[in-house]
Every structure is written in C-alpha cells, then in structure tokens.
Amino acid sequence: MLAMDYRGPKRVRAVQKPMPEIKHPQDAIVKVLRTCICGSDLHLYNGNVPDTRVGSTFGHEFVGEVVEVGAEVTKVKVGDRVIVPFNIACGECHFCRQGMFGNCHESNTEATAVGAIFGYSHTAGGFNGGQAEYCRVPYANVGPVIVPEGMDLDDAVLLTDVVPTGYQAAEMAGIQTGDTVVVFGAGPIGIMAARCAWLFGAGRVIIIDQEDYRLDFARNYSYCEAYNFKEMDDPVVFIKKITDWIGADVVIDAVGAEAAGNTMQTITGRKLLLQAGSATALHWAINSVKKGGVVSIVGVYGPTDNLVPIGNVLNKGLTIRANQASVKRLLPRLIQHVQSGVLNPKGLITHRLPLEEVADGYRMFSAKLDNCIKTVLLPPTASN
Amino acid sequence: METNVINTPIDPKQIPGWGIDADPKNDPTYPMRQRMNVGQDPDSKHRPQSLQPVDTEVLRSIERPNVSAVFGTPEPPSGLSGMIRRAAFHYSENRYRHWLPLVLADRVNVVEGIIEDLAHGKLPNIWAEKGYDVEWKHNRTSLILKLSAVAAVAAGAVVLLSSGDKEPKKPKHYRGAYPEE
Ligand SMILES: NC(=O)c1ccc[n+]([C@@H]2O[C@H](COP(=O)([O-])OP(=O)(O)OC[C@H]3O[C@@H](n4cnc5c(N)ncnc54)[C@H](O)[C@@H]3O)[C@@H](O)[C@H]2O)c1
Ligand SMILES: [Zn+2]
Ligand SMILES: [Zn+2]
Image (cartoon, rainbow over all chains, first blue to last red; front, side, top):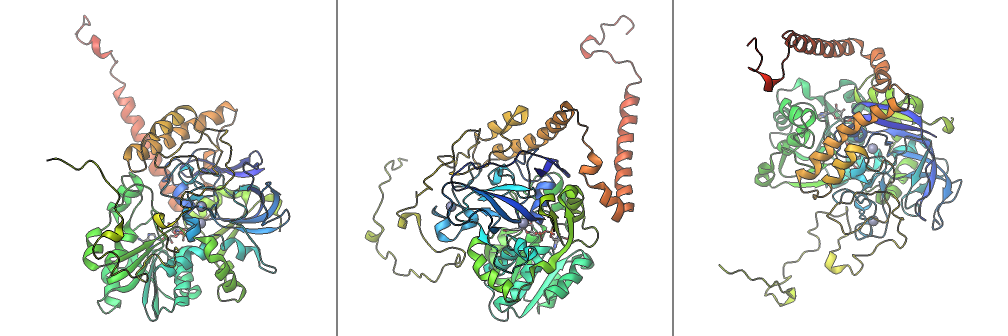
C-alpha cells in the first residue's frame, strides 16, 4: 500500500509499504478515505519530537472504511465508515474512565506523560498513522464513531482533531458570558478555537498571528477581530491597551512549539533544541491575561522544559489548563453542532492533494505557501 | 538528626478537621475529567483483558511497570540509533539523559536511512522529499536566497578546509622528529 514515509527533518515521501495487520483482538484495519496534515505534524516534520524514527508514517487525522476487524470488535463492522479520533484509548483504564481519552494509560509503553496518538513518534506509542491507504486502528470498540448519514467526509475528517481541539481550547478556558478572549495562532486550531469561544458566550474574540492571509480568513470565518503581531511593538502592551489596561479574561495558546516572534525563544527552542520548542506564544499568553485569568494551552510542546514566566503565573493568580483534546468525549456534541450547521469544519480546507504529493503538501503547509490553511491528502484507493 | 524510617499510612478521618472545608465544586479539571482519585477507584489497576503479544522489541518507560495492552510495532530499534535509544530508556522521562540521547538517535537514524536507501540501490531524491517543487512554484525568491545562503556557507567551508590543506600534513606525534625541522 502507498504510505507517507519520514526520512529526516523536512524530508518525507510516499512509498509502498506492507499492509497493516491485526495485532490485538480489538484492532480494526481502516481503508483511509481522507487524511489531513496538522500543525502537530510540523513538530515531527521539523525533527523536534524525540524518538521520531526514520521510516515511520505520520497522520493522526483520518476517516475511512473498516475493511477488517479483530475477534473482539463488536461496535463497528466491515464496511462501516468511521471517524477515528486522533488519540488511541482503551476506554477501561483509570484515565479513560474519567473521560480523559487523550491520556489513556494502556496504549503507550514508551512514555507515561503522553497518551498514544496515531502516527506521532514512538514517544506517543510508535503507531503508524493514517497518511496511508490503510491504517491499523487499535481499540476499535472505543475510538471510532460511525460517520452519520449524510455527513460530508470533509467535515468528518476535521472532527478527528481540529474541531474537538479548538472546542476544548475554549471549553478549558472556562469562558463566562461577556468574557474577552484572546487566541494566539490563526492556524486551523486557533481559528476553530476563536469560532468556538462564541459558543461559550464570549463577548469579544481577538486572534493574533503573523500571517495576514490567515488573519483575513479568521476575521470572516470566526467572526473575530484579527491583528498581526509583526505590526506591534509588543503584543502584550497591545492587548493591555485594547482591554482598558486590564488584560484579557482568558487567553488561548493555539501555537505551540513552532512559535515565531522572539529571537531568543526561536534560537534556543527551535534551532538548538535547548528548550522543548519555542514558548513565545505561551509567554505572551501568561503576560497578557488579566490577574486571576485563565490560560488555556492546546499548542503542543515537547517533553523537556520551556522558558515561561512562571513567577507571573503565581503573582497574577492565574489558572492554567491544558491537554490533548479528548476527542471521543466531545464527538457527540460536536457532531450535533456540525449537523445543525452551527459549525462548518470543511470551510477550513483550502488544499486537496493526492497522497503521492505528500512532500509538497508538507512544504506548502509548513511554509504557509499559496494561502494554505488546511490540506487534505487523498490516497489513490480513496478516489472521489 | 534521626529520621523516622517507618511511614505508617494514616486514616485521614482521624486527623482533626479532615474534610471540613471540602468543596466538590472547586474542581478546575471539570469538565475535562470526571473526578476520581486513585484511592477511591477500586479499579484503578484495571487493564484491558487481552494484551497484544510482545513479538517485537518495545522500549518501555521505567515510569510504568509493564508494556501497555496495545503498542505500535513499526520501526523497532536497530543499528547504532537503536543502541542509543535502548540506553536512553534506562532513565525516566524526568531526565535529560532520556531525551537528549533520543534526539541524537533520531539524527543518527537519518544517516542510517540514507545508507539503507543506497544499499537498496535507491538514491534519495532530497529535492522532492523536501517539497522544493512547490516552494519553487510559490516562493521562488526566498527559496533561491535560502539555497544560495547554504551554497555560500558550503563554498566558504570548502575554501577554508582546502586552504588548510596547502601545507603538507604531518602526523602530530611525529612533529619534530622529521630531519628537516
Ligand atoms: N492539544 C491538542 O489536542 C492539539 C491537537 C491538534 C493540534 N494541536 C496543536 O495546536 C497548534 C496549532 O495547530 P495548527 O494546526 O493550527 O498549526 P499551524 O501551524 O497551522 O498554526 C499555528 C499558527 O501560529 C502562528 N504563530 C506562530 N508564532 C506565533 C505567535 N508567537 N503568536 C501568534 N501566532 C503565532 C503561525 O503563523 C500559524 O499560523 C500546534 O502546536 C498543534 O500541535 C494540539
Ligand atoms: Zn492534528
Ligand atoms: Zn485507557
């Protein structure tokens, strides 16, 4: 089967690989119909996630058709079209039973600080991902949700990560009616977080990025104010100024380890890997939220340390909330929002490429070429 | 000073004031998780019944007692990078000794990948793998600048190295032992 193949930092290709096999009685094999490239994949692509082995297949956002099931699989059957959450979760461990499907304890042997994620390095369990024609899906009784009748596969594929992550970013922010919400990052996740902030009753939503085309997109898609930090002397002072010198009620970090905007952070975090990525956006978030405010982190950082002003967290009495999205927990509600037309996930998709052109897809998304927001890859067997 | 070496578990209810200010609503993790403490969860050690047979080398974090019920099987550790990875897993996720060798192993693995390609008679098409076609199409000037910067650095390095080559090299430990010196 054709599959994406990681060769080293910023080097990927599509090659023929062996078909995945059932390894556990709760496994299913899914034929991939749509798969996306995500901002999280960029951390792998740039070589910043430890234990990313050459030869692995990325891809944690995919929908597809079940083609084979293990002996204990009862919830899905061959022929079902399924939304596959990006986290691999057993549904039975101490954490899964608390609804923390992003923090399962029975799917990742290599690290305890992170659950398992499809196609996301051995640090996240060593599973091959969905940027391929077929993918092994463990715990098929727990994760996959059948694509509802009439739902567009382009909407479905964004329910595997982008919609739940953006929504959980807003949910964790504990937004109260009328709150001013600042979102750092106008990638798919930040745009979705800004859109979802309104669902929780925000009074004002502001998004910050450095790419004008993304800011223009966000202004329309998320009904929010959008500002370019490259035009600001100091983003923290800017936010103080537009919030009556109080600071925002809540700030969402939807950037993570690839952040730009501060040379020292970029050099130590992204070039020298002395930090677990560049923490510029998180730094700004902590300093621009009001006293007693909430910082919600969905931007991903590596497993070591980051330079952030933790003293200000204490002195300002901040609450920090963060997690990998618990996709499975949120899906029922979010499917409703898509079906009722409140959310329009597929409106984020700007590019569609055949899986064969995966290298171009990564370059385009990573270098923000051709006004790219979200890219879908189509495996050859997925025609249409 | 003597330290108390016996830590006897205490019944918390015996402690004066235990729980008098408990407030179940004061839970910043809601709705991210339904609150449950390990101590209150009779099933906290519960695992899925079927365990994936361990028929490949799985590196295990020493912060857990066992191999998880399912795990990924591709790319088991191999070669020099595999040796480094195995060594890294002697240390917990709490240590740089775990993560820094893994980053090193990743870089070694890239070279192993190129050797493996060559061994299979395949010359990796790095231009295509890096997606430079699409960068050429949409961002030509910046790509040219980037590549010429790389070329300039490389040329500089070649000049430096080759200028160093002009004087005939003598093995260090023979210095002074040559008759002409
Ligand atoms: N927690 C989760 O479950 C989860 C799930 C998916 C993605 N993520 C993470 O969310 C983040 C965003 O994902 P994405 O797909 O939108 O990625 P993306 O790369 O498309 O978007 C990131 C955006 O941040 C902008 N940016 C860079 N530095 C900035 C700064 N200092 N301030 C403001 N904006 C800045 C970039 O220009 C870019 O537009 C990534 O870190 C990704 O790993 C987390
Ligand atoms: Zn993703
Ligand atoms: Zn679990």
